[in-house]
Length: 308
Length: 285
Image 1 (cartoon, helix red, strand yellow):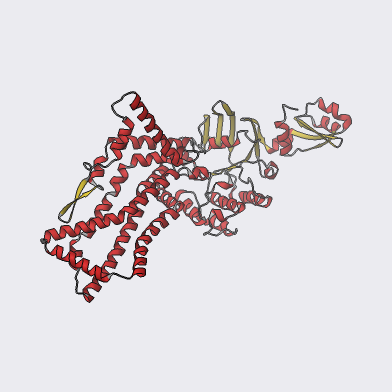
Image 2 (cartoon, one colour):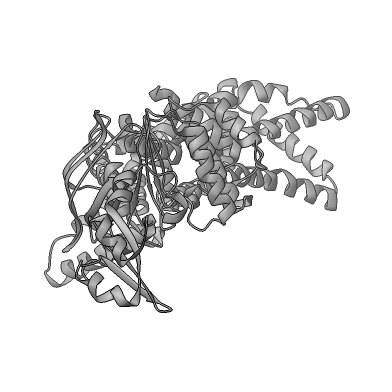
């Protein structure tokens, strides 16, 4: 029964924010497909320059050994995939912030919290579903849209390869075999869960702001942090303290310095990649401690202070 | 008969303001009780305490459950309509039915669909596209399809026109009420629900001023149209309430001898609204 309730509650979240969850990734993917198409339609396809560029790359790769070729192609594909994923991850993050700051606020504002709480669904399940939606489902939606875009581009590349192969006697098929396409995308997907755990304190804070705020939940999420940082900076300055504890904690926990950046092996080459080992390295006792405290406070407010 | 809801010495304060003070009520199967009081009397707070939506002091037992500690299990057998406006505007009718069907073990989807088939509401409608009356019908369809033992209605027809209000209470009796269930309803339109109530509790400033069955109230209180010559004589019997209009004075008496009252003027059975006004104005009369 609990899994059925969880499933129904997750569906409810998707229904409520269906506009944002559906249309934002579709619009974003459309931008990546239709803007280049529009450019080609308006300016024509620069077939000569494409052939020249492909010939140059082909010659460059021809000078490398087989293993170096594989590594170079994997790197090119991986960097291209990252470049395609980055706008989706960025916009997805903005949607996550929007969702988490509103998920518990909106239902108090329109009083529907009274309806939801009149049903036999525990507040714990409700909060868990909203957290899962914000921390995991939204990134999954945007990752899926980016992956779909990569696949569409790959299909277009395959079509182009056929044309080049038949019409211009240029074969790109060997490149596909060496590019480690699936493992490249796989590494990006692998970062999803560790990133969600790493950012759990941040997500929990947004949910607390959402359940606490009587109006403007985003400001409630931002202003206390900014105020605390300013007060701490003033205190550090005037009391000649060695460093700002809170400010240092935030920078230390959420920043990715070059030392933090991990590497992954794609094909035969090690690539700098901040999406997996580096994120896992950031997860420690603070993640658990802060997340549990903030989610506990969110639960308490939900149970005891549901009225706006 | 065992009580479905038992409230003992219920107290609740918001800061220094006391909103419920020593409330005692016991509700059994078959009862339809009206919790009636002026604005700010504590009706909604009382119901929220019963539903475990707010903390409180005192003892509340709903179907053997503690409302705060066992709220989820309790809500499997308790249905609640707080206000017609609380269905979220983004929700589609089909989504509401699907969600209820999946989360509520006692929800009867076929019953809800049959109820909605009698209305102009279709599955693809969103709540925001429905009129106030239709939202009330949808909410009622969702709630009446729950095989609940206790139904709690807090101002359920607020803002609805008279036709919709009547339909609401007709459906309530026809489609939900049975002898093994109990309904608690708060409303300002006491005249409209008087005929369906079996019991009533008047609440003022957080205190229960009167809690009796309708039959007992009808036999206990008398409304007398006192002639002008008899007014001073009637005043000696300490009426709960008096209203003078066009040379005729109407007085409400509590537990007075029928024969004595008949000497003062025409004696009639007061409406619940008359008794309510009388009880609420007791101290000022």
